[in-house]
View 1: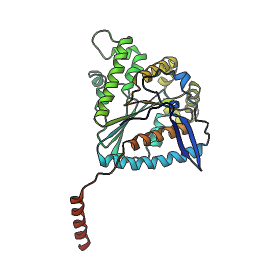
View 2: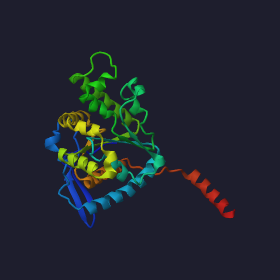
View 3: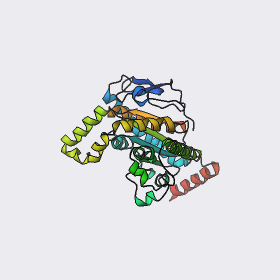
View 4: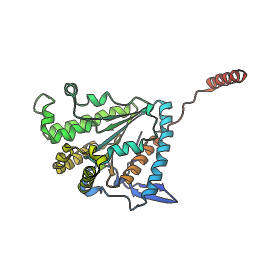
Length: 310
């Protein structure tokens, strides 16, 4: 599958009563072979000037149904699999996006993997191993809540994580990370060549909005369970993470697996953009139910006639 990655292409999303959201593709995608600045080129509060939250959520609900119908064809056709990747800073809304956007998906055709700290078994294998064994089969949708990209994010920022991998030589340094970017790009090229289509979302959250969401998790008892002291400690490394995210986007947004940078200060807009993107990618696959052929169709009609007599 080939994306239309012209940065100046206009995106129009019909919303509500003859209203629409309009923006250019460059507002939410990292063009391959372009160097971007996360801070200068992408606004976490971006909504394309659109403020109709209720209308946007109506469109999200419509997209949930649209995605359900596309999933049925994906499963029946059994040619492609979909790997949806979410990467973000803490509190950016990964869990909520998965819960809302994928609410209409048949659970039998979908699985979600949340990548936590690697186990001792994971550390005894190459770093892509634990992700590779969770890649969806053809006809399926797999969702990675965080992913192998943590190997060029958290592992890059915390040298102690890299030390636990017991790699030969002297791991770390600019050349080491460039090699990992190349390995990830080749891995994703291998997936697409075999019918597994990655859809990669980076949820772009502002530091101020993260603070608001952390405080809300503390102030609201029913959200206390969401707050982690570790998340708060990682906030002190904000600038390091932003640089790591920017490096990741610049090195691993490719023609076969581009990065979509989703403005995430407004959850309703993030869910609109995510649901539209997933539906757009699946529709470009030209999914359809298999044609069983005339012979099989005739056989089914004979069976139907026998059932009518029964």
